[in-house]
Length: 554
Image (cartoon, rainbow, N blue to C red; front, side, top):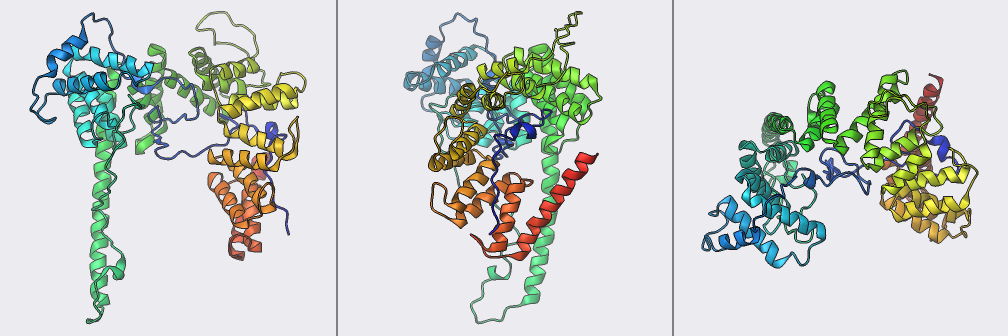
C-alpha cells in the first residue's frame, strides 16, 4: 500500500513562505456571508476577517455623533412618550417611533448592556435633537438588525432611502450599499448585540423556478397515455421564458448596482470616509460586476486615508501597492508607496499593517526612506521586521505569534539563536487567539513529541480537528492521516477520505491532498474504487508539477 503524505510544515514553513504575500496562513474561503460575508464582515466589501483588533467598528465609523448638547434628553423622551398611544408603528412619525424604541431600550435593557452599548445608546439619544434624516437612518438600522422590531429588509431600505434623499451622507451610504448588496442586514456590526431580536422569517418563496421537475412533475393517473411531444413543447416554452426572465433580472441587477454606486458617490463627496473606503475598494478591484477603475479607486482610498486617517483605506492601499510590487519588483515607486501606507497603518494601530511589515520585509535590505511623514531627512535604516511583528502581537494580531514562533524555532530572521522557550511562548499565544496555523503547528509538536512536548496522538488529533474547523487545509490532511493509520483514534478510511476531500476543496493545489485522494480512489479505501478518478487526480499532480517547473525556470 502506498504511503500517504502528511502535510507537516513546521520545519519547512520558512522555505515555503513568500514574503511578498499577505500572510503565510492558509487562505480560508469565507462564506458569502464571508461577503463577501460579502462576509459581509464588520467592514463592508473586505473581510479581514480573523483580525481581532481590526480597525474600527463600522457602525461607529458611520455614526460620529455630536455629544456637545447639555439638554436633558431623558426628560425630552418622557415628554414625548405619551404621544399617539393608540397608534401603531405605521402611523407613528419617524421621530415618535424612534423615541418609543429608545424608551424601551432605556427602561428594559440599559442595565443588561455592555459599557460600549450604553455609550451608543447615549449617542442615539443625542440625535433626537438633530435632523429627521439622521433619525430615519437609525430606524433603518433598527429594522435591518431587528432591534426591538422584526427584521424587515424592505422597511429598512425605505428608511435608508428617505435619509439618503434628504442628503444625509450616512443614509446615502447605507442606501447605496444596500442596493449593491441587495440586502440591508449586514451593513454594520450589531448595534446592540444584547437586545437584537434574532427572530426572522425563514420561509423562502421562489416564484422564479420555471423549469419544474421535468416529466415527473406532470400528473399522470395512469388512465391517459403520457404525451411526450406536448410535454416537450411546454418545457421549451418554460425554458424560453426562463431565459427571458434571466435577462430581465440581469438588467435589473445592473441598474440596481449602478443606482447604489451613485448614492455611494454622493456620500463620498460629502466626505463620509466609510463610503469613500467602500467606493474606492469596489472601483479598484471591480467588484459586483462594476467596471474596474484603478484611478478613481485609488483616489477615494487615498482621500479617506489622507483626510481622515481611515485605517481600512490605509491598509487597503498598502496591500494594493505591495501586491503590484510583488508582480513587478522593478517598480520601486510602488514599493515606497506600500511602505508609506503600511507604516502609517501601523502607527494608527492596525495590527495587519504591522504584521505585513514584519512578515514581508524580513531579511530584506529595504531602506527606511520616504516614510518619515514628508521630512526631508532620509534615514538609512533597515526595516526592523521583528519589531513590527512584536508590535503586531501587542496590537492583537492572531497570525503574528505563530510566525514569530517559527523564527525562534529555526533561529532565523534576526531573532538570534534558536530559542525553544520563546517558540513555545509565542506558539501558545497564537493558539489562545484561535489561529489555525498555531493549532496545526502545536498538533505537529505533540504528534512528533518535539520541543518539550510529550508525544500524544490524541492531543495531536484534537488540535488538527480544531484547526480544520477553522478552515485549515493542511490540518484536514493531517487529520485524515490520523484516521487512515489509527493515530489517536480507530482506523476509518471513510473519515480519512472526507478529510482529504475537504483539504482539496480548500486548496485545490495541495499536493498532499491530491496524492492521497488519488491513492484512495485507486485502492478503493473509504470510497468505491475508481481508476478514472484516480487518473484525474494524477493528471492534476502532473499539471501542478509542470506549472511549478515552468515558474522556476522563468
